[in-house]
Length: 411
Image 1: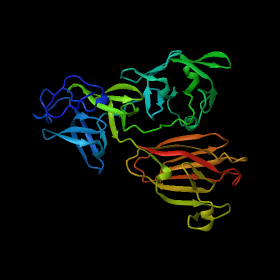
Image 2: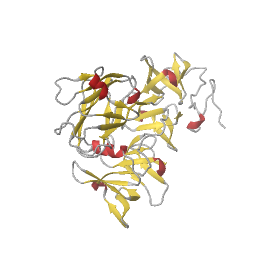
Image 3: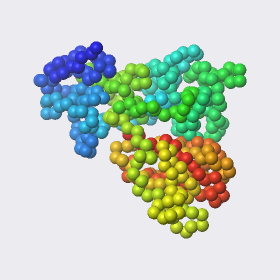
Image 4: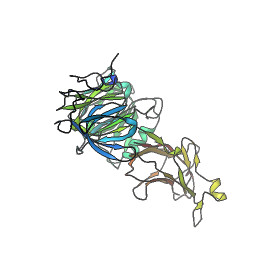
């Protein structure tokens, strides 16, 4: 049972993050005020839900509330009043490897250590303590940096349901080969896995990454309430947080995927409150069009033909060749994530171009050639609109019905 420390108290040391707000040693009670003269305090810029900002010293921090210094006196804020907390720390080049957790976290790491028969895996973020996580919380490991040549294929594999572990080999600069196997261990020297009764060790430079078996697509079941972005662009989705350490060396303690981790304050770039995942099928549709074969102009949604071929919405979105749908993007989201594939009912098909357009600018475009799943993860950059479209391929409508799966906005 833990108690919540209120004003006028000072505490040396720390308590677990799950115990709520923690006061680090102030030397004086908050009633005396720590003011702006507190060297080494956790300084940050707060952005409120109405867009207003203020620069302040953070004294107490949890998923529910934050206490800051305001003219020498403590001011208590609910996290529901805030969009984010940001620091002035510059971004740094991330390590080459990364791990994806089932709660939605993406952590940039130096290396992974997974011993045979172990139920835990150790990951090593740069300039941070080693983190031991249950293997059950691990969704994927990627050993190479993102690359435009294979990112769509890699993200498509992440979005696909898999029944067993998958070793994703990199055959050349532009081709990935998924191999169902049983992963035994991972180290700096390579990956050991069982395949067709044989035990094989492959060097990391031959492998793009690993997918850990699950009964469904790799996606978070629920959204943890806080996202911490560090200077190496790791996205830590935390169930709880607490400000710990000392006044001169403040740290942030986070509870993540069954583990506890600490980040030095100078490694944090931002903290986003009330982490959100917003499905695009719930967004406002601004426009939807369908261009019949041979038509010189698009038919709007209020025409009979467009009503017949109108994009069909469920939790997934079905679009045919020549169709597009434009959504209004709610404020406060940083990126759009999802995947696209050919409709399972299609039996004959040819190349089908698909597009995601951010605002009126950046366009992600790929071509579906078979039954592959292609994934995307794109920055929104304050865009107000997002358009999904399917273009007609050279075969003029043969098999160009596609499904956009789990397209969602991430804060």
